[in-house]
Length: 533
Image 1 (cartoon, rainbow, N blue to C red):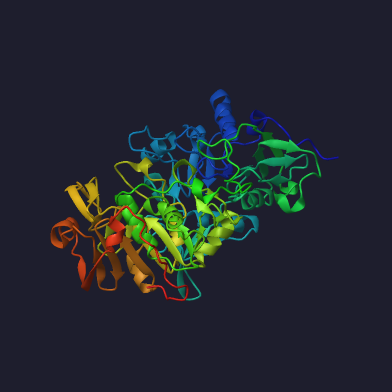
Image 2: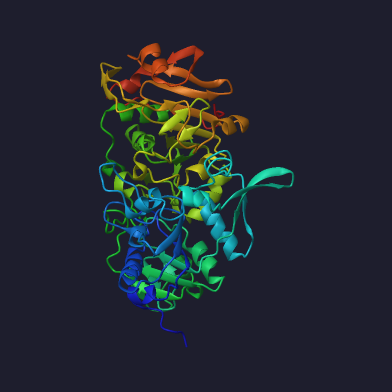
């Protein structure tokens, strides 16, 4: 006879022993088992247990907009160590999350491990292999030559990665970390524990996380929206089979994602008309996004990140070119229209939603064509920082999948403003810098190396940096200005606003004048067979 699997969140919290390694499936509020995490935090407040937990978060658990996630556990004595691909993030004006206060206060060892590598660690734990051997992250903050993923002094004193020589080559080695408990989420569980994801905006990595805990004698707890009778889920719809699930916690009010109770287009149950997607208003940010769009080829598979580049799909809709490229995002959506703001990480009208570990294998192996990403800083070697802002650490989420994505990407287009805090306008087809930014973003040395320029040169990756006033290219001789915006003075507005000498291309071009006018630009994508450049 099958044992009763449905229990309360408070009873499930009592299953977690002191000192346990707990893996949690989430991406901000998307897929976050927040009721379970709240129950663990409440039990600790009432009983002082569970204590000294290590938590693993391949992608952030919780946000700063109402879903506390890991903050439920971020209490002295409850949380002893945390390894995460990303962390809850939000505006600098907001109170930092409790987890960030623990990190910056050096209260616990905290690590920022690339999301794909964390998923790889789970796969190795499930198969009882010794660890992950990878080149992802070499020459970045992931590499022990630099920071070894450590976010504070306590973490630096307890390394989790080393450089090793294998088969005559240098690699990064992450020893396996074996979870004792997996806390995952789904939409529906049947009475036998089979899990389906029909209302979810992403599958994320629950199968790998459940396998890692189950195969090592651990406990798997699934938070779900509803319970179905045994045998009523179609087998092709089951993502995590009941043989891996020990307990079910029902949370009928779980959010689909941040500020979203349920939107069927996010989970692919309906397709929205293209006319329902708002296109960006004419602005400096739209100018940059348009120029980024000009780098795409017809038929490209294009990864997209948070920031200005997230608007590029809307540019293609406005230009009548939707469907000419296929968007791929780390939470697992393939195709459709990646969403913005609170719903970032989800897509409407997706062609497929695949598990994040598979998506990261695709990224790590360089299977896609182009990645469109943002930058905080660029240094004299072309290296980029996206993951650390020391004066306001909770403004950035950490690296997430950035390092996995950029490790072997054939072409990367970084976008952002040339300086921080500048007052900018577009008038009469030209850029007007009414007030220069106080903070330079092209610096001698980045605060953290999220992407290595020298490694990109060695691997023959194609790297562009697109700003409102110029386009720069990473060349073996250095960072080079290759295009200039109308209205911008090369010496005053570009060369003098970088902390290091920029090269200037012998044939410096003007950026397309159409970019700087409100009307559509008649976007023509490059031919599919044209080589990357």
